Length: 174
Image 1 (cartoon, rainbow, N blue to C red):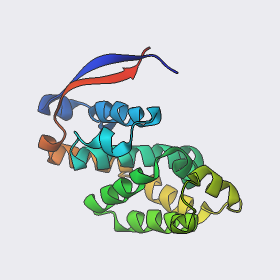
Image 2 (cartoon, helix red, strand yellow):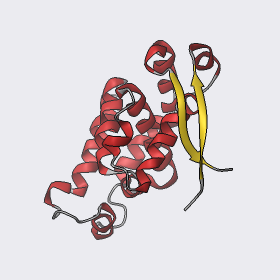
Image 3 (cartoon, helix red, strand yellow):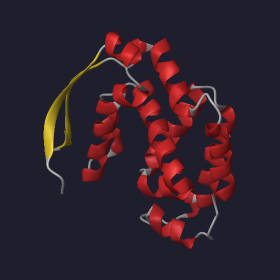
Image 4 (cartoon, rainbow, N blue to C red):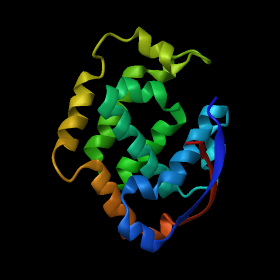
């Protein structure tokens, strides 16, 4: 297990005006990292604003789909984060991407999975390329400006009051 250290973050309006979405949402991202330590996601996000959670979820989604497609996103993201990602697309009025995500979730057919069956086990049952069309829809969208991270940043800067943060989070020791 990687050693964690407490790190103080101060995300102010001035900070928001000068930094990208990844920097602004860094304390939220490290809060999400606690989920991997057997802390339920709803506990992790309970002290965060919905806008912070949704925008961080979108960044997570973008990185995972860019690096390994929807299968990687579903394999690495907790299933309760998928709805936050969908809500983020909806909040940014990216309806085509929200539909694309829901259609990819439908391929998993999570409602038919017996209780306790991990998402990774279900992913292993799917045919190779099951999400290829959904990966391409996202990549075609994000290929042309404005890219998803730019849209997130524009949203953050239009509503900085929802992204202010002052506090300490646990972060991997460097």
